Every structure is written in structure tokens, then in C-alpha cells.
Length: 222
Image (cartoon, rainbow, N blue to C red; front, side, top):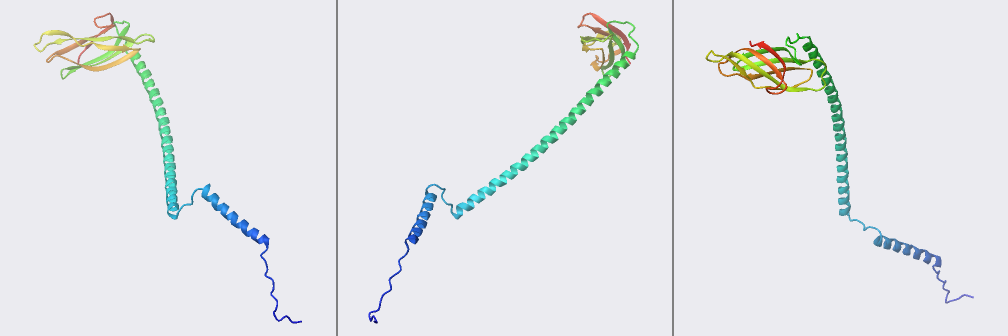
């Protein structure tokens, strides 16, 4: 029999599991947002992100610059150490050369004729020149044996000649301090009175001024 009023189909109901799924998604999203807001650092704006990137790039540039400076400093240090090694070798070579020259000088001095007067200190050779109101001298002294301790004393010049008025005169010049090892070559100049004409010089080696005579020799003045 035909139903004139028709019939309504029943509405489909949303399954419960779907409501649970949607609820779970919403709850999870809300939890993520809550955690971000409460525990994580705040999110940066575009301007803040740009400023942070700029700061990072600047810090990285400073790091690279400092690294380059460190490399240059290390290179300079290595060069300085190399120079120090070279200077050390040159110094050692110079010392060896100086020692060789001292030995050669000792051989030459020893080969000179001995002082005829003898003494604990010999005046092996000497040269005197008078010019410009000064007495230029060069005296070679020698000690016998192999002395370990230097001898301290003075060298005194007694110069005989004529004064400006033609009067024979002998002058005692200023003593010269000595620190004599086995040998010594002494050079220098001493002032003379104006108009004085020297003829000869008596070289005296003393243990102190006006002290004990250790050696003596008379030499002409050129």
C-alpha cells in the first residue's frame, strides 16, 4: 500500500571515533602552543631575525680576522726564532774568531824580542809619536808563564825632552790603569805642555801609583 505522506530517511550520525580524533588533534595543537609560549624562547620577528643574522655574520668575520692575525703572529714568531738562531751562530763564530785572533796576537807578542831588563812584566815593544801637543803611544806588555789571575797596576810614562824655552825637562804623565792577563797591547794619547819637545820615554809598570816596579824600558819618541 502506497504511503501518501512518504517516509523520511533517518540522518546519519557522526561516528564517535571521529569526534575523538578531532578532539585529540585540537588538544595536541593547544598543547604545542602552550609549551611554545611557556617553555620555549619567544619567536623572533623579521627585524629581529635580520639583526641576529647580521650579528652572527659580524662575529664570524671577527673570528676569521683573528684567525688570520694569529697565523701572521705565528709566522712572525717563527721568523724571529730563525733570526735568533742565525744570530746565535754568528755570535759563536765571532767569538771563535776573536779567540783565534787573541791566540795569534799572543804568538806574535811572544815572538818579539824579550825586554833586556827582564822583570815580572816585560815591555816587549813600544812606539811613541809627538804631534799636535799630544804623545801618541802603543806599548806591548808581556807576562811570563800562563797567569790565571789578571794583574792590576798602572803604566807610567816619564818623558824627557826640552821645554818651550829650551830647558831640559822630564815630565811624569798621567798614570794609565792596567788589568793585565798574559799580554796586552795598549794604545792611546796623552797631552803634552805647549811647546814641549819630547826625546825619549821611560815606560814603567808598577803595581800601583808610585808603587813597586814590575817592569821598565826606555824608548825613543819620533
